[in-house]
Length: 317
Ligand code: RI2
Image (tube, rainbow, N blue to C red; front, side):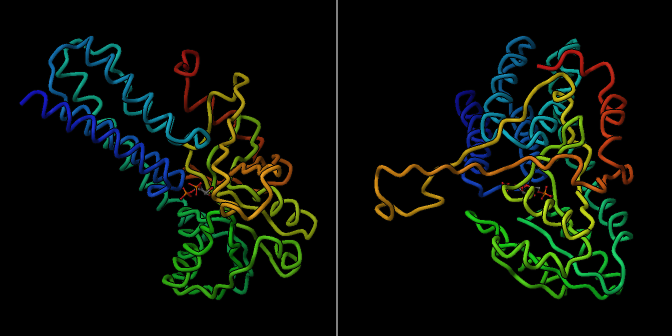
């Protein structure tokens, strides 16, 4: 019986990790909620009763989840939020209940943040606006869909977002929400930008200097927007702020397999393929960061981070 329960617990972590690695679960917010939910399942189904052993096993489970994808800090924040207070819990039951409650609370807060950003961000969109979005951000799509729900007449250009082509998901999402949507290939961004009023993208990580790490190509979109005087809006829950960057940590940019870019035998063997899947958009190309606690300029991020993470930022692992 005990062995069976342990197997079930391990399966929860293993399945979540492989779903995130293989992008069956993707998007910075979704992977954070999946990580927190996996820890809830882990704690809830934990077969032992020894507090120290539970802490050790929990750290291993957390590390395994964090190894699934390196770039989106939302996953790191979701996992660490779920483990809050465990080190000072006095009994196994108290520690287990903390993980269950924290993990569930993180997911509820996350969903509420996405809904709040939709309401706040929609106010930035004017009737008649032409917008552009890149990749597939549930938060940016939420903002655009809310503006349309409010009766604003807008048009959206959505990029294909090679190599995973998340833009196909985006145009389906936008079409379902009744948005006038046009799909473009990534190379068309600069050419189309002259018709665009505002860009709305999501975030994987925001650094303490207000830079954005998001899907590869986001920086090109932002630079083209800057040249064309289109406004750049980043839709980001505050759990996509990285407290570690305050102390010099550099965000790891994930590189994925070359099979996502070329088919076997398609190019000579002596040709290398480089497949980074995120890039950095410097703060100077960003007009607004739209969060659940309000709209801010990139320069305000440091202060918000210091307030949000408080004393806990000094013992970051
Ligand atoms: P939401 C995605 O990464 C994209 O970069 C997107 O902009 C970001 O996560 C945020 O997504 P991937 O998982 O949380 O497709 O806004 O590599 O849904």
